[in-house]
Length: 397
Image (cartoon, rainbow, N blue to C red; front, side):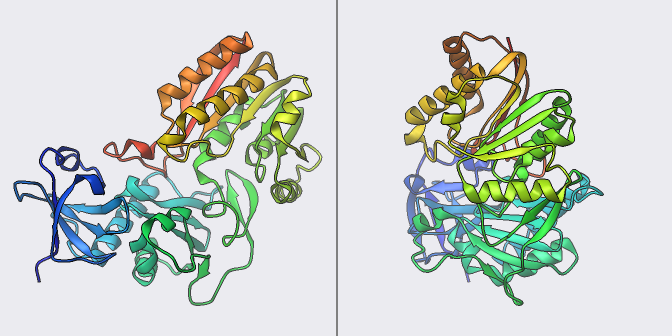
């Protein structure tokens, strides 16, 4: 049977010839074949030339998520075969990166648009995989996703399914709580990243339970920490703070407003034998910065301030105020490590914000690193929003 066809408006096809994975509703001219939510459809331009295939959702502004381009003859053109092939490709990329490795048993297996699997993120923690759906198709095809994950890894793993909040914008109205496959939800367990152990409950916490994207940036902080007094703001479960302590910092303080996060960080410190080298405090970050005092290295990794472009003006003011205060907490000659995980905040505007914050604080920055997520979070150049994480390292004068 021929596939339903989603035809694009004239002048809208160019990004998709270059591999853009998302067709927004405003680019659609017509739909033939009456596809329902989650249907596998063909996308064509206004001249009826085939662009690719993907999952359709009439209830979402992400009208089609393209997983296969028409020119990709080596990728199956059926939905489950395509998903399986993409996961095999993703697993091969991670093996080429040396993941997992002798000191790291957790990795991102599938990075949504970055692995041509728009709407599906898969993180692997030892013998457990956590699949997070941000598109309706990934939620409704759990069995096929499970089989594809296990085939790509070449081994049996427990699988936990989690749902991103954006599913509400995908027309999903039923329960979207975490769910385990077959044997139910696994009990909390420990994972290793760069030789440090972290407790993980895959059914709780943000996203898939652990922020794998900061792996390399945490190691960078470890390399800079020796002999320094370190302040880790928005410390969550202690990733930056523990790496600073392992790197030889003379004093480490982790601050987060979440009491459960602080409890998790303290437990992680004990598990790594670092409870005497780092302390954690459940406090508002602004209040701690307002107390004065300086540190040799300040890490600032706040939550997402701009969920969408409409939030940008307010987000930049928050980033500006936060980074101005953080710079004033850095001793002369010290280091600021500052991050943004907002996809809507691009690299250059973030650097411009830091320039303005430095001027207002009366400080001078020497930027030595501008980094993104760890390499198991690949970015498709046709989807630049995939480069959501910015991590800037600057010496402060």
